[in-house]
Image 1: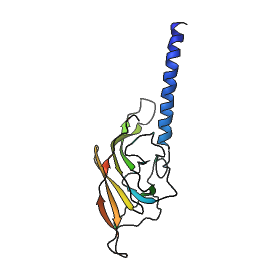
Image 2: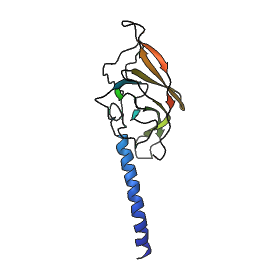
Image 3: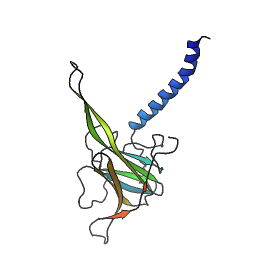
Image 4: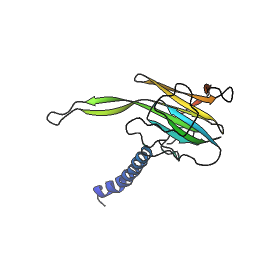
Length: 194
């Protein structure tokens, strides 16, 4: 076996493993959240960024979390609204996504905010290129209660600072207005090993 054949024997498995990782990552980024359809449920309204990904039964963020994905399909452009009939509090924005979640299991919600960046076109090749660069990502984790109605509201202040807060929608009386009551949630980082 010559040196080129030895190099090919070593490089091919590494290359194939890399292709598998890239393929799984791309597939994850095009995935849709596997929303539950039975069992004890809670409802969550996601507000603040069209780039929001849900990680069910997880306290962290990873493309390897089973069932993770975008709740209204891949967010490749345009705002979306998905309404499943949750209670509406005053001040609800025009764009939001409502989802069902399994009660009693942790769920992580990750928001990404992007700003456009531009690269000049090469001489004679046309217009400048536009790229989106992630400038801020925030993820929160909590365990919803059965029958609960929640909102996860993300805010973005400039290039590198964003935050998200969790509220539960509650009424003081059966016919009173829906109120937003702050609920604790935990910051969610990337999962170990994935």
